[in-house]
Amino acid sequence: MTATLPPHPSGPPGPPAPPRGWTAPRGALAVATPHPAVGPVPPAGTPGGVQQRPGRPTPARMRLRAAALVVAGVLVAIAGGWSFASADAALARADANAGQLVRLQELQTRLVTADASATNAFLVGGLEPVDRRAVYDDALTSAAELVARAARAQPADGVVLSALNVSILDYAAGIEQARATNRQALPVGAQYLRNATATLRADALPALAALIDANEDRVAAEFVVAERAWVLAVLATALTLAAVIAASAWLAQRTHRYVNLPLAGAGVVLLVLLVGSAVSLGSVATDVDRVRAEPFAAASALSRARLAAFDAKSNESLALISRGSGQGFQDAWVASSDTTVEALGQASATGVVPSDLAGTWQPYAEGHQAIRDLDDGGAWEDAVAAATSDAPGSANAAFSVFDGASSEALDLASEQTSAGLESARSGLAVGTWLAALAGLAVAVLSWTGFARRIEEYR
Image 1 (cartoon, rainbow, N blue to C red):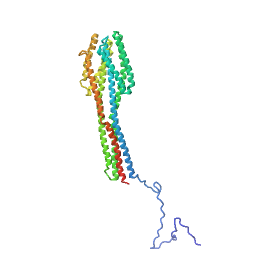
Image 2: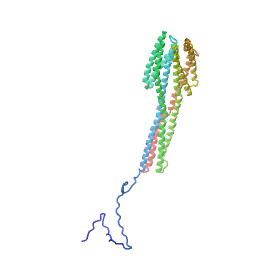
Image 3: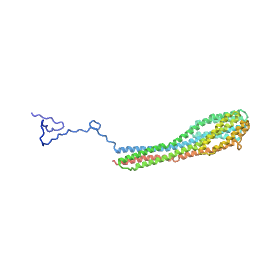
């Protein structure tokens, strides 16, 4: 029986294998042995072979970069617009707070003016001079009006101003009580006057000083905001400009086209915005620094000088009223006079006020010294006569000259402060819209520049 071979697992049977030991004759053709079948190539990462994952297609990378530049352009629009708007708003608030500060300083001066007039009139005895009474009434009426105006201008100061108004009314009531007793030639009138003056200095003036400090801090804070507004706009614009340049270089390397007009336009817009923001907002910072160092500093110094001057004038009269026991008031006069001289020097150093303004205090100081020499020499009646006289060359006449000159200089410094801040604001509102539109233009141009190259792959 003939044996049957089993079928080959991979197809029809091949030729039979030669016997063991057989060799092919010389010259015979060699029969090729079929190569075993090759299976599928194993995936990358398998032991049988490694295959590199293909990178992200170029159009996809273009879209990513275009989207990134669009986002950067929108951020430039936000940052630039916000920077200009922030500087504009900060200057507006600084102007308002500076106006409130001047208002409060004038209120402070009005109160000490009223006190100085009341104490000087008290020296006359009996019915005080009509002109002194008129000065007192005008000063106190102006103080009440300033309290109302300040409360409307700055609601944050309303609570303190309300308490201040009560203190002013208490002071006025004390002065009226002192006047009533003084008309009757009662010695207790002097004590009523001292009590009223002490109430003014213990309650009203410290509260007012706290408000002045708070508004000075507000003005300083707004100055800082306006001065630093350029940082965000310039930084965002510079970074976006660098990103556009880098994207243009990358695109040129991939496409071998070295000029992309939309991207070039975006770069030009960013460059113009960078220079414009740096110049405009940098100019704002320069103007703010000048206003702070010159007219605003002069106005603050003049307000301090006038406050200290009227306080000294009040202490002059209180020292005479005390008749031999007023050394404490004289010491207070010396301290106030030193403050006045120092503040006048600071105001003159700014170059805003006349350089000879400081000299207007010296004639009054000399007149005061003459009064003190009379009182210390035992001529109290002569000292009172000299302190209440309005004749040319008297202490009151010299003080009136100082009052007029310092008031005029303060008005000038306040006007220059407001004008300087208003000048710094010019163009900022327009700059807000231009910066926002420039950022949006960069976003559109960046997307357009990449979109043209992406179309070439379709």
